[in-house]
Length: 222
Length: 208
Image (cartoon, rainbow over all chains, first blue to last red):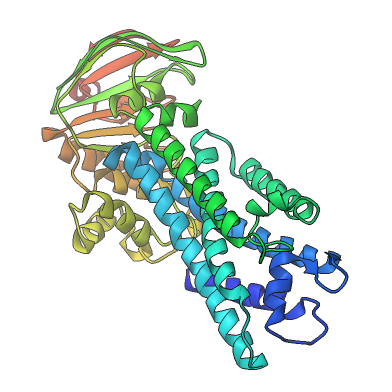
């Protein structure tokens, strides 16, 4: 876990360092990478967009691999504590990894703050939005898994949704609700956070419904 | 005691278990025999509540289960001990000492801190057996437990099962081995196409 976290920190830090902002290592990189947008030309910055997708691949695959490895123990967990225990183990694992990602972001923010001696108002939104967006994605992963869908398909599905939503969000701001941040996040930050919170509530209800239905392992084993 | 009465199970509109009626008693080791796809694993899943019957009744007290179903699956990038510690944390019945003593029983103590991804299939099989027995469950359900074991570990596993059988219901699903090699079973349940073809007592001491 420690080795994996260090690797994760190194790769995320590297992505923030190589993002294009015209000022070298600067705290504005954090916003540019998270949005993949060019505020000067008011257009998508393709290079930053690709780096943004790379960070999402890292976040999603980190959670997917953690949840999947727990899920492999499903027979052992379920016979010890029932379906609810299995679901709560998966949720706990996803939450643990979301907090690892948040911690890494904190470290990156701190390092960039030290280097550039300036701060960004994007910080708070980024933290809350990362927490909520990754929670939605983590819960989606769990629901997909409980339906017996394979790890590869789950990964492909979530990555496709994120890649497309990020791209569409520059044209249609409503898609920003699916990603961590996009252009014009300042104008609709509250709306986006509310939408994400509602999505989490819906996902929690679905997960709860599946775990209480008693049919969980049948779907998985078919 | 576990009693199944006229139990049927359908998955995707296919009947995988048909009219299963049987009684399993403590202190006995049952061999569940049959070809691949005969319903052995489904029956094991149903016995430990991983599956619910479509119709029929399953009567049993609230037993605890130790299962080893299908291929042994673990968190590959974690050590044997941390896999077992995680599983033990669910029921909180046993601690580090008991985990180590069970690892020793299956000859894995010296590999306790080795990552599971570096284990051979036989070692994974023993680790799966270890997680099944470590909390001293009332019911032990083992699917092909002897796969990939060398002669010594095979004999050791048989010895351990024999030692534990007194106060447990033990069901072992297996196929493709000479039954007289394993002086363990009290009853043999033969399955075919999701049905119980026969159920007969077996005197292992006579055959050996």
